[in-house]
Length: 161
Image (tube, rainbow, N blue to C red; front, side):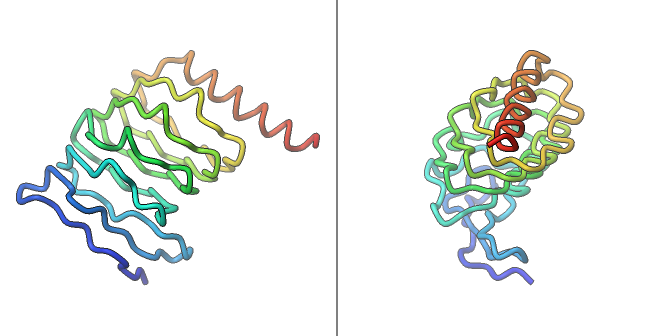
């Protein structure tokens, strides 16, 4: 059972998150509360205690979510299902720090419009990328190849050390 640590606060039409909510999940991670699918704007600071962004913007309707581009994600370990089914999402989040992330499964699954270069992300601790780019019709194969090469090289490097 999840224990809510901070309740999210939204404006009246739920297009803006005024305060990010989070809870203690079953894995003892501090997880962000799932945002309404209408969210267009969030605070530019992600609470440092959050380690899981799982399902944060699942099925979101918007192309751009103002504020997430500034998030410090350096403490995050789980980004699974984060934008799953967010068909219109296509925002530059290349500056995110991903060195602690272990799970990116289904992260962009169903993001039909997503086509951003995230090849500079650190995949060194990622264990699970299953279905990360499933049904991302617009995603450039060049970016995908760079990501997969980076991921595989880091896995090989770790095994040979």
